[in-house]
Image (cartoon, rainbow, N blue to C red; front, side):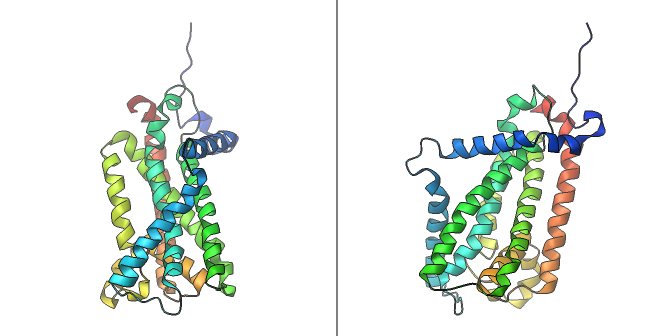
Length: 271
C-alpha cells in the first residue's frame, strides 16, 4: 500500500494560494485564542483596557512626576497612552507569536496547512486587543477635551506600520522558537527592555541630539512618534526617521518570511 507524504511549505508550488484558501482556519484560530485568553477571568475582555491603564499610570508617575519629563501642552497621561497602545500591540503580538507554533504542535504534526496561518492569527488576536484599548484612548480624549487635528487621517498608515512591525517580528520569533526553545526566556526580556528604550513613557523630543540616530534605529520609535503626530499633532518625527522606520519594517517582514519559509518544512520533525 502506497502512502501519502504531506510536506509542509510545498503544496504544489501554490503556497500563497493555499494561504488564502485556509483563511477560515485563520479566523478560527484567532477566535479560539480570544476566547481562551479571557475564559474564566473575572473581568473578561476588560483586561485589554486594565493593562494599558495600569501601565499608563506607572509611566506617568515615573517619567512625568519623578523624572520631570515634559509633555508640552498635552496632558501627560494622554501622551503616554498614545505611545502605549501601539507598543502594547507590538509586544503582545511578539510574545504570543513566539509560542504560537509550539502551542499548536498537535495540528502541525498531523495535518497540512500553511504554517504561516498560526503566527498571523496571533497578530490578529493582539490587534483585537488593540482595537478594544483604542476605545479607552477615545474616552481619554473626550475627558481632556482634546480633539485630533486634520493629521488624524494619517493614522491608518501608522496603524498599518504597527501591524507590519508586529507581523514581521512575530514571524521571525515563531520560527526561531521552534528550533531554539531558549527564546522563551529571551522574548520577555526583549519586551521589558523594549518598553524602556521606546518612547512610550516619554516624548522623542526629550532624546538628546547625540542619541537621536540610535533612537531612530528602533522601528517602534517611528511608529509611536507617528501615532502621536496623528493624534496629538506632536512634531517629533522627521521625514528621514519615518523613512527609516518604513524601510526597517519592510526588511523585517521580508527577512522574516524568507526565514520562515526556509525552515517551515522542518517544523513537524523538530517541534
